[in-house]
Image (tube, rainbow, N blue to C red; front, side):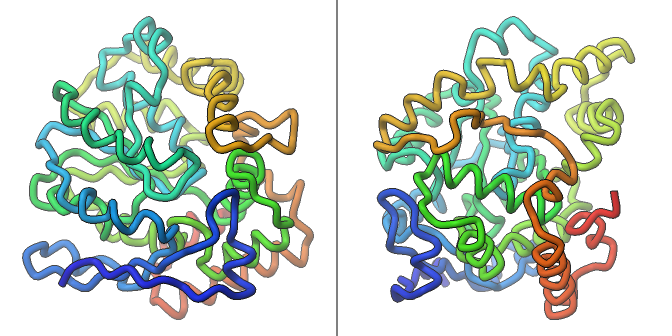
Length: 339
């Protein structure tokens, strides 16, 4: 059965989900795919997306995947840029000069169906990537069921990064507010997030599908928190996944390159110039003058912005989701880390 896109009737929840130029949304549904055995590991809940992208869905589904492609996939604001820079350098023999000279979004094009870029950007992806020499490095926020179907038979390498729910929600709110022209309050955004009405939601299904596939040889499951806790170990693990071997000194140098302080000042990864272009293309202005695409890079920074009542609401929400959808107990530390 093909992917089904159903428009959502306007209501209080969709009003809280609106951002500049986007007020119509859909739920993308899927069923088990008999020809793709791994789909048995996917949750069947529908995903929340802007309605205008329904015409692009078939092009994504039929995108021709190459065996030596490298994909970085995450729910938004879960360390995507951080992971991309790490993966690109590991796969390109630590070529810092080239990484500095070429912006990350050119080195690592983005398969987008609901983010900050104009429609033309989503359409330009296809001819641009078709012409790229192998191996291609591609990023996407799409959940597993809506990635190109070839991914599950060709089996290129996929790196998936997850992050705890509360930090993700806070970071995503600031992203919506400053780069997508979101006019709602933080309370409005939280209501949308907890009711699966932000782009690419449900957050928990997005992560859980890849958690279920983490033993596949072509999938590496990482967490933002592990990268913060012991990045050299994560770098070693990632290098091994790609069949690369680096010395301890090279790994420490890469870990230093990937620190928050250096990433936030790195013009090739932090959209320092690109944010102005995004604002012009979308006719918006960022509301917080100090906002940067790489914002804080902390674990537990939600405590600076969430009330105790809101923290409890998130904790209860995750526990209810775990119980309702029979989530693996091991994954609770990812959603609600103790650190």
